[in-house]
Picture (cartoon, rainbow, N blue to C red):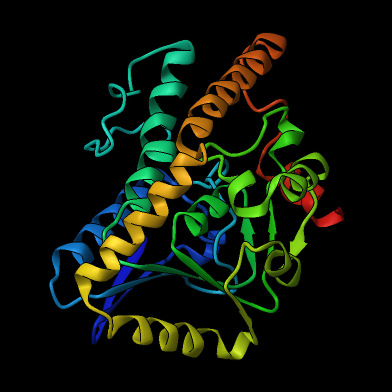
Length: 279
């Protein structure tokens, strides 16, 4: 099971469960996450949703190299921003898939009408940032580390381009331009995290925060969340993300044209991991 679901009183805990692959996100996991979030939204007893990752790491990001990579498999689409990618060709295929499983899904989850908290330990890399960023709050262990190294692919950041809003413009440029890891302490200083706690206390501290939120009225929480999200969008977040998604796909097309079809600029899961380790 790629995603586990557990009710703890008024808190639903949704856990990514591919620890052998550092919780790399294939499409099966993405749709399982969507189903778990929908289950939590539809349960009137659930007031808060926690997103966690099993094992040593929260998530290494998009699955670009495991044996269970399912890029050519059709699923019942939920975002429906484009038609099915399977059977299409060229830029249409990648644009269709990424509109659905990356940008579209993340936008769905950002708008969940219940508060969400990401509980992050170990690696939170590239596509994993998207999962943490769509949550309303992030609690991280003191051993957590973060990076968006996809500029090494010639690509201007991951598909859900929230960098300037969650990091600020200066920090966003540093993260993107260098591709280097940054620590939980640095992320807290930049305003990306709510709390940094000892690794041994991560689950306890996250649940304590969730339970504190859960005593508030459901309607008040939903409206407060919508108010903040609307304010972010009035600051240009949604339209900015749309414009960068176009640049993202221009970069994929540029790479493919230069290399005879490789849209990742010669990079793979191993090369990206090794480069990130040396940063």
